[in-house]
Image 1 (cartoon, rainbow, N blue to C red):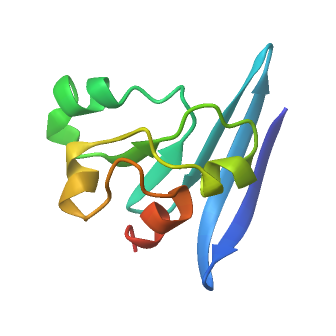
Image 2 (spheres, rainbow, N blue to C red):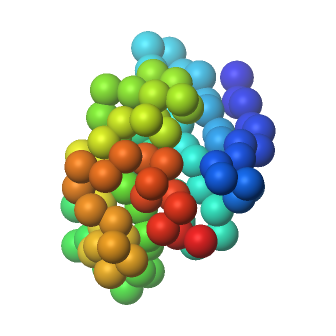
Length: 100
């Protein structure tokens, strides 16, 4: 099942998407500039093979819900996210607010 819903952080709208798959869930929260995602996100791929796309993204591991994704520290971030002041260890919701 796929669930999409708007969420609001400090009055700013983001889109939360969860995809239920066998034995795992894919979770992402995004806006038009970037996103945070569960452990399925391959930051190394984005930084190395897809560097020219300049993706702004962060990865949190061990999360099973959108709320956990928002509250978790980011385990890794893309180079482009770093350029926006988003750092490893930053809480998901804080990272999203830097993407506005």
